[in-house]
Length: 119
Image 1 (cartoon, rainbow, N blue to C red):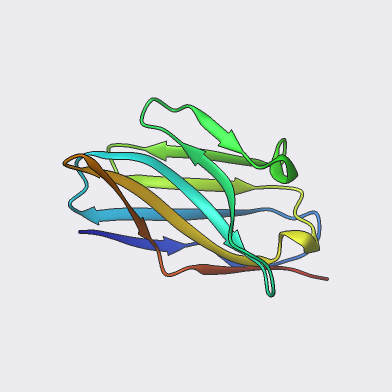
Image 2: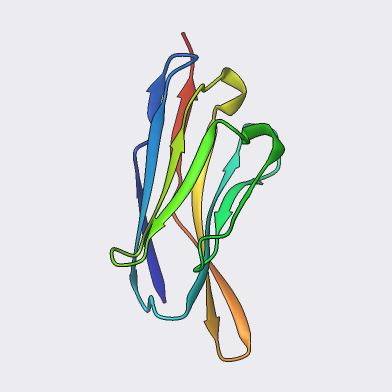
C-alpha cells in the first residue's frame, strides 16, 4: 500500500501562483509514474500533468507553459508549480502514483486538495 499526503492548495487571485506537494509513504519502491489530476464541479477528473521516474513529463494542453511538474525521488515527493492561474483552474487537485505490483500496475490516489482561483 502507498499513502499519499497532499498539501499546498488554497485560495489565490487570478494571475497568482501556488505550489502543490504530494509525499508518498509506505510501499514506495517500484513507483513509476507520479502525477496530478483535477476535478472541477460537474466535470470529469482529468490529467493535469505526469512525470516518470526518468523525469519525462506530460501536460494537459490547458496548462502547458503555466504549470511545471517535478519530483524528488529521495523524498518520494511530487510537486506541481502552478502559475498564471485563472478561474478555470479551480478544482480539487488529486495526486496519483502508479506502482508495479508483480505484473500489475496499481494506482493510488491522494485525498485531494482544493484550489480556488477567484478575486
